[in-house]
Length: 192
Image 1 (tube, helix red, strand yellow):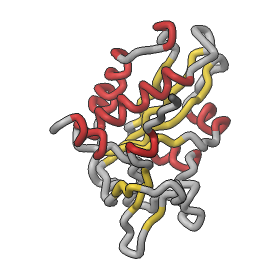
Image 2 (tube, helix red, strand yellow):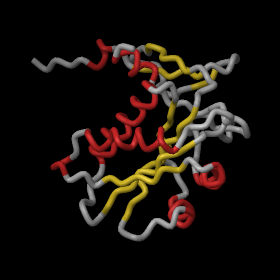
Image 3 (tube, rainbow, N blue to C red):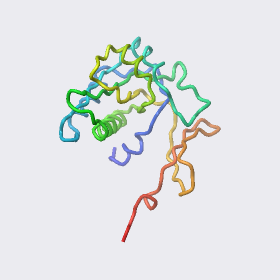
Image 4 (tube, rainbow, N blue to C red):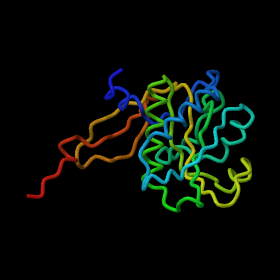
């Protein structure tokens, strides 16, 4: 698979075939990818909690909010929920700035998932106190995001948008998830 194909295949999938497991080894392999990516000042302040045991996967699900632009959709139903998660933490004993490093790591994990034939979704609207309690996360760590993982069962397409189009993703009458993206000509800038 060409790199461009991996990038365009790496979408935010929100519905999965819950019968298809994502093993602990797969989750660990994806987390390992983050050990090799650039990090601000090379501090490497990110830590991860792999969640692949079914009972814990089920317990974590209610602490996540799904697809803010789809206001009438409560999130994946039974049978369509993720098979695993990666909880990304920021270790305050190393740094208090995780922005750039967390984005690089999350994207690398999602690209690795796409290359492995699974899909993912970054979830950042979280019930952090509930997650901290559930996973016994000690003070000194920030919960940055949760990356949901599973075998996608939805079709996600990229739509080229015009300058005045909305950036809001949507589902059409056939359940196809559309993600508007700006064109190359719109993002290229010249100031001379």
